[in-house]
Every structure is written in C-alpha cells, then in structure tokens.
Image (cartoon, rainbow, N blue to C red):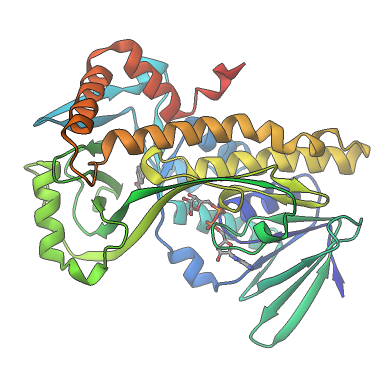
Length: 389
Ligand code: APR
Ligand code: PHB
C-alpha cells in the first residue's frame, strides 16, 4: 500500500487548492480524481470570484493569468419591470468581483501542481474510505488498470456534490432544500451584451447575463427542474434570452456548451469525523444565483490547510477540531444569501400574483435604498462574513 500525508479526493477547486496550499507548507499530498484531465479542465461551471477569494489565489502565487485574463467588475445590474438598475459595489462597499471561469482556476491549479512535481492521479475513482477513527485512514480507488490503495494521516473529501466521502462521514446532520427551478446554461461565442452581469426577473422567468471574455458570453435561463435539453433548440434559447434580458445588443452566436442544472441547498454538519474532513461541494451545495460555490470551496480549504499545517508543525489539534465551526458561519451566510437571491429572482412556478408583487417590491427596494443595496453588495462581494461577530 502506498503512503502519503494527506490523501485528497477530487481535483476540483477545493481539492487542487488544498493540495497546492499544503505543498507551500511542505506537506505532501496525493489527489485522486475520478475523471480524466481533459474532462476536468473542460467542465464549464460558474465564474465569479469574490474579492477575498481572488486574494487567496494571488497570495498563493496563482494570480498571474487570473489577473491578466479575469474581468474586474465594479458592480452588477438588476433588471425588472422593464428597467435596468445598477448596483455599484465599489461605491457601496469599496470592493468589486472578478469574473474568471472556474475551469480556468482549475487549469491554473493543475498546472501549478504538476510544475511543482505534485501527484494527481486522474481516472482514479475513490470507492472506499476506511479507518477514519484510527490514525491511519485508507482510501481504495478503482482505475482502468485495477485497484489501488493509499494510506495517509488525513483524508480530505473534496469530491463534490456526487462524491463518496459524504457517505463515509458518520453522525453528521444533513440540512437540505430543493427548489422548483433549474438553470439552462449556455456558453456562446458572442460578445457580452453589457459590461457587467445582469440578473433579470421577468414574468417568463429568471435570466442571467454573464461572460467569460470580450468574445464569449455565459447565459442562463430559469427552466422547470425536470426540463429536457432537447426541448430547447438554439433558436428557442436565444428568443427566450431576448425576451427576458431585453438587451438590444444581445446577438445570438454559436453555442459552445449547454446544460441543465437543478438547484438545491445542502449543508452537512459537522464537516468532519475523526480523520476525514469535507470541503467544498462535498460539504455544502448552494444554488448558483448567489455565485458562491467556488468561493466557499476555496475558503474552506484555506481554513483546512491552515489547521493541518498547524497540526503538523506543533501537534496541536485545536484548529482541526474547530474546522467545521470555523467554516459554518461563512457557509450559512452564503446559504442564506444564495437562497435569498434564488427566491427573489425566480418566477414562482405557480405564478402566484402575491409572490410576484413581493418580488417586485423587494427588487425596487434593493435598487432604491442605499441600505438595502449595501446589504446585497456586502454579501455578493463576500464582505459580510467579517460582520458576523
Ligand atoms: N473519486 C475521485 N474523484 C471524485 C469522486 C470519487 N469518488 N467523486 C467525485 N470526484 C471528483 C469530480 O470528478 C470532481 O472533479 O471530485 C471533483 C469535485 O470537484 P467540484 O465538483 O468542482 O467540487 P469543489 O472542488 O468542491 O468545487 C465546488 O464546483 O460544482 C461547483 O458550484 C460548485 O463552484 C462550486 C465548485
Ligand atoms: C457565471 O458567470 O457562470 C455565473 C455568474 C453569476 C452567477 C452564476 C454563474 O450567479
């Protein structure tokens, strides 16, 4: 059986950034990833980095391409009742956000790990975690050429929303909410129709305008949770985007990727049992409306890496013991904000007129009151957790 200090399940932002941070602190790890490298690097996900998350990547020496190619946004737009309102985050809370695709973060992290001689085993599906209550947990994994097994001091479950590590976490509580909506997302070769994101509440349903570069747009539509992609030919998608976003400069272009994502909120608490620690989507899932998923993943592992380094350095388990509690405040703030944004911006599937008027009233309040706008801005850019006391 092979041995390492920390075995990490999953080469998403959580697993890769953890491996990178541990390496900077002189700790060895092995990352097991079920998929192949091309799949992981090509998987289209969200793309908003909070100010603090971008800063974490920069401090870890990963800011080069991100700062050259990422798009700095000072604010976002809300569109409802036929009008667009801008929320100027820089003005409201003194910080903006960085639009940089999660898959680009993943590519940068893989490149950095491989350049430093790190081990990522692609095509390795972790199937069994054992001994988490002992000092020598093990992970068994399947590859196309047979089974392998790794022993370590600690197992980090960074294997996302469909991973296996969550099942191995005995005794944890599960908090969950399913929403009656899904997002149909496309990546399209067309210049963005506006400089910043547009979150649109429309009687036909929610729509979001985002981007990846001056030539590539990322667009989303609210659809029913059981919607099928083949009911949405490109012409229908563009027509619906035109109606809901109502942006005269939106131009249809070749669709590079499309998918439907169901929406749910999930928290597993505590995020730890014995020598198993969960991070990122393995521990909690947010609906994408608040753009928090990747930010939470990066923040979790920066706490976990700090705790592990302290433990290896001094033998103290204090930070490891408080890992879950230390993450919980940020996780629950993001859960609340994501749930709030989701309810605010999606059309009630029953078309309840009372719900509709409540949403319009709150959107008008957020656009008209500096106090309300500031609260949204604080949460969106990730400045709210500092105010939690
Ligand atoms: N063995 C090995 N790898 C696995 C296993 C397994 N049993 N199960 C899942 N994986 C891999 C997945 O293939 C994926 O590459 O774990 C990785 C998890 O990565 P992400 O899903 O990107 O999760 P995370 O790193 O927590 O990042 C969270 O991803 O889903 C988005 O919105 C979410 O932005 C957030 C981010
Ligand atoms: C994206 O650019 O993919 C994106 C932006 C904002 C969100 C969700 C996704 O809330």
